[in-house]
Length: 316
Ligand SMILES: [Zn+2]
Image (tube, rainbow, N blue to C red):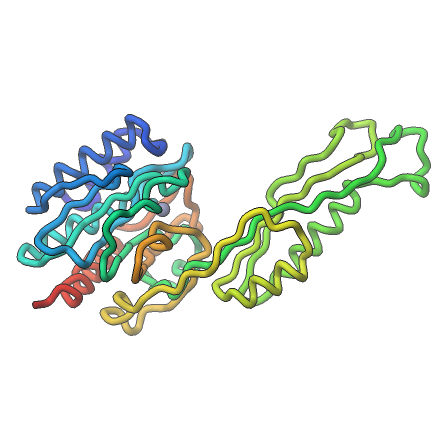
């Protein structure tokens, strides 16, 4: 089977393969069969992560097979299938192809890795429009952005929408609306910030809003910029991760490919010495959506690059 046929076969199990669901299990079974076909020994760790290993596997490549409810067919699956293909093309090399559990949803899975590699390579669809804008098929990831998530709460007073003069109102939603614009203005070069969720109370057509909770998602590949962004926006941080710099395993085989930051989190955040390569997303960079798309030509180039990087790292 070709890489594209294998990607289709995983999608045919079900577009939505939740962590530890029968659908994710079925995808792991399929991948395990392909690993054996590629001459790899199949192992599973305590968290259910799947390893196809050969020899003293100090270099790993892979991604995840779980997916979100509205998923496309490339997110995660591409990295696993490409790793198995690259392993088959390098039949005498010690390495492992890996499918991590629960990348999309779980606190378990890849964070419970029991053995640790010298290097980890992950091929992934970009899930954004940058490479398509540049007209480039592949991009070397320099870092996975650090993220801060939290909220800001605005308190007002619930009054009658018809009888309370504008000048006498304390409208929490008007203050929240100003804050949404402020968040947007704070995000400059090297950072992004998003308000994606509002909770308005009492959320009634004829009542002045009394309380609004606003979510904030702020990201940057540089810790200092992220700190400054959090400070400038002004919100209660509930969760935060530091940026994770990526290694040069792909840069070594693609010296001229564009460099870009990953705004999204990936399995590579939780594995030692990670390097990542992005494949161009078509259809405007849409992801976590059935229209998610990378071309067969771009995927072929990416699999070649992954094979070259693994070849270089596992050369005797
Ligand atoms: Zn993914």
